[in-house]
Image (cartoon, rainbow, N blue to C red; front, top):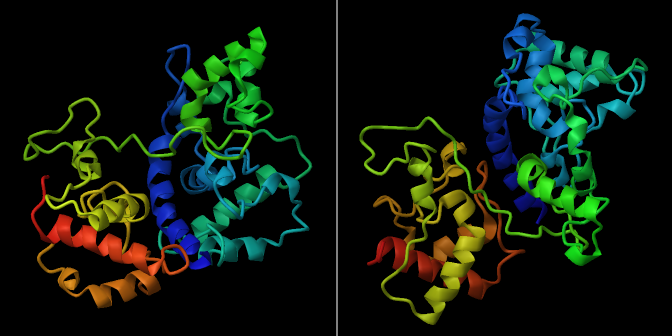
Length: 339
């Protein structure tokens, strides 16, 4: 499980870092007014700009690691606001940013940041979050387009988890009902996390949005509104023509465990698979011959693939379950399929 989790988190960093660039520079204002992104850019700070692009999604705009990503990590990102400069050496922080930290979701950024950029972001963190001076960085601020954010205060208990989302409706008072409705209509997009009495999501935690601006005139079914079709079409499961009991079991197991990286249709051309390096295997490729050799394929699934995001599944799936997955793969990707 540790191996699977580590490899999964490495692949998730690609996803998070990619989305960081999209999310950080969207200027949101509930009043519909134009945000002051231009003014913010005019006051550009290299360390701050790097932090907001690469670090914000896990460590938070205010450095407190109170983020959606952090809520899903077994080892939470560091909360810089409870550190002081003398308790966390600058050299150690530089090494963490440059080389990452094994066993955590903290990856090394030496491939995308040079030493000067790393020094700038480390100094920004130390200066902004690790001193006794009042914290000035705040995401929900007028400077970021959030005018009078306190008008959402009735939703705060559901964001913070002091009221669980699965608390029976009839047990909520009128203010709490209004807060829940506000949370689910306005806040859940960014603050969707396991907020229930059991600690599990109250609905299926499955991605339903895709990156924009991937239009091509060569794609006949592109959605001109969301531009999602180049990825969305690969999240449609392939239905084998021959649906034996083993294939049915294998299809369910494949979609639950393998489709996240290899795509529902086995092509690895889904959103996550497209950003992994090395890319997950395309099971539909004529070059993939292992479907005709179930024994080697079984061992690969059980043991994982070194230097890739393919984890070892032997602690998660039984031999019979792996055999069912292979049966589904052979029927869906090497044989006759409905779609």
